[in-house]
Image 1: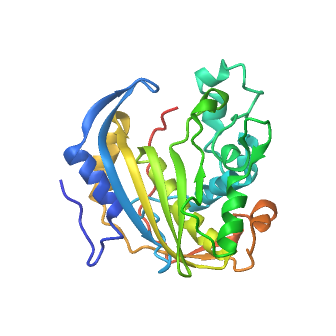
Image 2: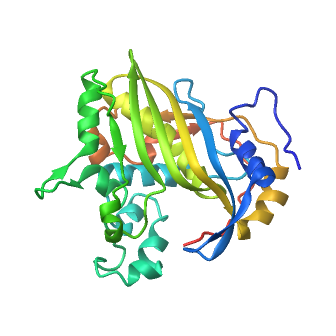
Length: 294
């Protein structure tokens, strides 16, 4: 099988190229958490040119970019409750907070919608041994705003010592910011990637994360280097990917406009919403309802 390509479409089709690579090179792996087999490959690298406004939103099916941005805003604010995510336009945590059998039986769970110490909680309130908290994100913003890159401008959500205190280990787990002159770059690491569903959120989130961090720290935005360790398609997603999505030709990538009044981390924490992000020129094919594995 091959996908129809557009001229000069290296960036436009990199998502579809990864999907096709999974079909061509992937191996079947039994997933014990979901009890659904995955077609899996190891190592994938994607790039997003934020400086040139090439917004990496998949066009071979409709994607809900505002929900992806809402989830990112929740991470940056350190949310630990699915209700907080719903309030800003994202429902992706409902199932993991309320339908995950292991989490429902976990004594650390505080009740309905509680997610525990996952993702943004670790980024904003990493536990120190003395009982105080480290705000990783604030340190990075402070350094970058002063033109400092100590080669450790790293935001990580991956805390093995507290996996038992959350409903899900982080998939996109670490973001490294690198300042070269007046241009800010981002390298994002992902241990596990549900390509039909999760990646369509992760791609625009990486783009927006770099764009926002560059904007509030006073720098130009460069590129995102998105590194995926384990990329997979669940068996119950395969037919729709192979026979529907990969039969569609991608459209040109849209442009994303971000409210220029967003000037600080406090702005992101307090008043920024999905209405501060607008797309220009998004053409896409019809939606595809892929099953979600909890």
